[in-house]
Length: 213
Image 1 (tube, rainbow, N blue to C red):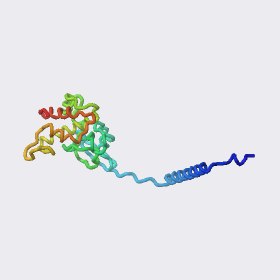
Image 2 (cartoon, helix red, strand yellow):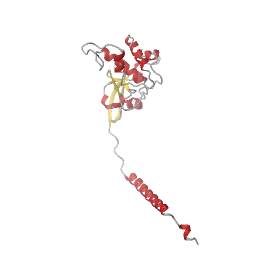
Image 3 (cartoon, rainbow, N blue to C red):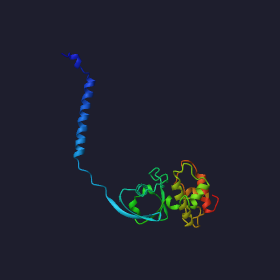
Image 4 (cartoon, one colour):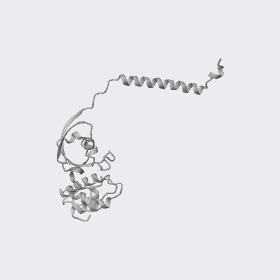
């Protein structure tokens, strides 16, 4: 017959055993409750059409889908990069109706009927855009992750200057802005290059503009 000492248990052990029993019971109760709870309604979706790189696309998306995720996950255009996903690094920059935007900060449904240009739409390895050629010639990239957004932004920068749109560093608001080192740096300030290739990027943009920036 077992002696009483064989069944002895410390106060700490008793408390631990009790706590474990309560936790197990609570977990079982939570699982049962979750299984009995009805499924939530599916998220609302919307049908939209936009032109991406000259091709019309019809999509039905969760209304919370960002333009960046629509391009990458639904159209499989992975050239546009997801960097910070907070609109701070510029890696997701695309051109929408001639205006550059951070595609991670805007919903796809907001661009129904608009024309979108990604890095894939600017040029191909066999027939590159002039800005792409300039980035290669001036080694305007190192790891290359931010390069698609940099190039899309650079193309838009020259269009902005050509259209006479001033920046925060434009000295004379009554005169047409010109392509200068300062103008390029200010206008490209929303695109971050963690490798630090900024001087080469500025030189590439100046090359396309026909000036030494």
